[in-house]
Image (cartoon, rainbow over all chains, first blue to last red; front, side):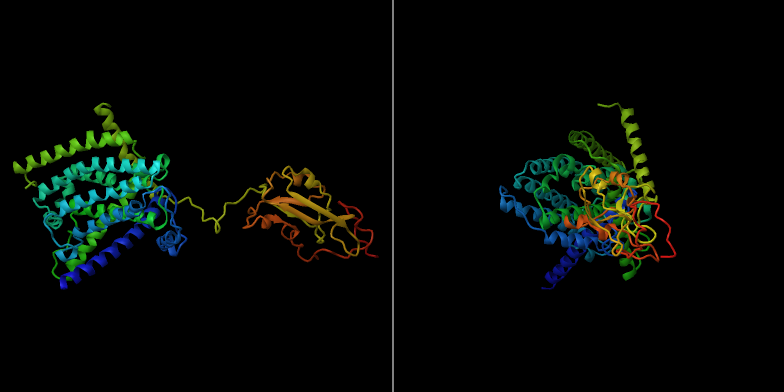
Amino acid sequence: MAPILEFTLKSVALILIALTGFAYTTLLERKFIGRLQARIGPNRAGPQGLLQPVADGLKLIVKESITPAQADKLIYFLAPALAVIPALIVFAVIPFGKGSWLSLAGDINIGVLYVLAVLSVGVYGSVLAGWSSNNKYASLGGLRASAQMISYELAMGLSIVAVVLMASNASLNGIVEYQQPGNILGWLIFRQPVAAAIFAITALAELARAPFDLVEAEQELTAGFITEYGGMKFALFYMSEYVKMIAMSALFATFFLGGWSGPGVNEPGALGVILSVLYFAVKVFVCLLCIVWVRATLPRFRYDKLMSFGWKALLPIALANVMVTALLIVSGVPGYK
Amino acid sequence: MSSAEDIISRLGKIPVGFATVLKTFFKKPVTLQYPEQRKPFSARFRGRHHLKRYDDGLEKCIGCALCAAACPADAIYVEASENTDARRFSPGERYAKTYEINMLRCIFCGYCEDACPTNAIVLEPIEFPTGYTREGMIYAKDKLLEAPPAGANGTPQVTPAGRFNRAILPFPPIDASV
């Protein structure tokens, strides 16, 4: 009985944190991108616009829920859930701090595989939404989503393979602990810069965010796969995008920025734990800011360039990186074993 | 396929773009908090119409409807009525009993201002008219007519006989003996 209770409590807490995080990530993005464009961003609802997510949520809840007459009703209703659930359950294996109780599923030894599997499932939400809406723009968006995500998943997987090779461990906590000893130079971003760059690029593509937001390219596809969605069903897609954004930032921090490690986390007792959670939160926050920064800077890729970039540039580079990493480890180069 | 140097020079430009965007973060936002902060208008800006008064509080408008005739958008409606010395709104024989401008039709060209023989109607650089209903956008005298100057009475006024026989300046000086 006790483990079930613990899991339930932790799940509820995690979902609440993720959903609050989602709400305030939208505000963070709007505020930060505003400043990057010499604007202010939302500042009317509440002090400094802090209640803007609440206002947005209320608006979306009271909106009329419309279902297109020609839509495949069951799948049309199922698709938003299929988008949100994978985004939320990625968090199960992410270590939020020192000690295995700070991740939902504990320290499981196939964490990396779980993450890759769950992220792949996320694409079904977009594809089924696009197909079931029975709208040409939505269908095109869904097709693009599937092609784009499948192409970029390969390179992403290979970039993580390099990390797993380095840490010789497929548990996320193990990867963090591998980076922890010593100093900031222990972070894998310094020893695996190519893998970090490939992971960052493919993560943006997986998120379908600028410059890879072809799935919902407004100028070409109205709103892509979410064209026919409104109200809370739209909000769920929005939620999945932002929750995934937080998850990807958390994964980047875990794989390449040392996760929860930092000065002072080895202190015994509560202090070390609190510091570790804090470091992790700061790292995730910085990654989120960078995602917004990229959106403010880069224009959207052309679709054929996106595909050729994924298959002809990222995939070979990622493969070569895995090979070089393996060679370095086998030949025992200092810092690689 | 582009050459290697081409690719490298293009890649080198990406950090420049990121730096430019980040630099903007440290600039002051150009946003104007609209209802609280406003951009100053030029002194000659043709904003919304005002009906002016003389210093003694009489209305300048004499109800001639030349503005309505000049209006290319047909936005002005004037209905005149007779002045008497016991109940005087404006100098001369007549005054505008009804003066309405449909702000939704008005194109703010200022022809009414040009047509006015007494400079009664002036487009002033203040905010544009706004409203929630079409009816509310028809501005009548209650909105158009400016308040009487300080110390002067509003209209109608009781005026000495014979002083305001003319509709335009100059009016004869006040006869102290009357």
